[in-house]
Image 1 (cartoon, rainbow, N blue to C red):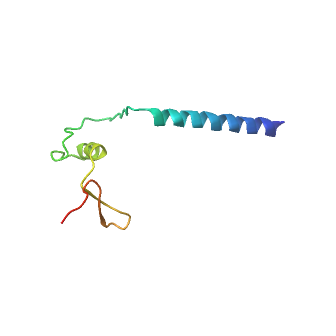
Image 2 (cartoon, rainbow, N blue to C red):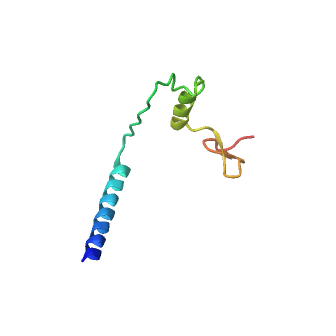
Image 3 (cartoon, rainbow, N blue to C red):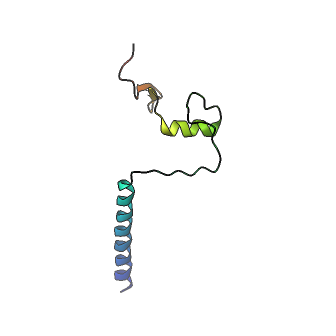
Length: 80
């Protein structure tokens, strides 16, 4: 009996988790709370750590690094 109750509890937990995950994928707005003030959203003008972190989370660069730390295109299609 205890095993049946345990299994049904796990099934209910799995269903609840799946339903909550589907709500997260359907969301169109993202709200981020920051415990401090950042000075700018301009990535060129960001000179403190928090502003740089916020700017990096909003903007992509032209290039990035892969797992082997080699240069790869992100937004740039090609370069010469």
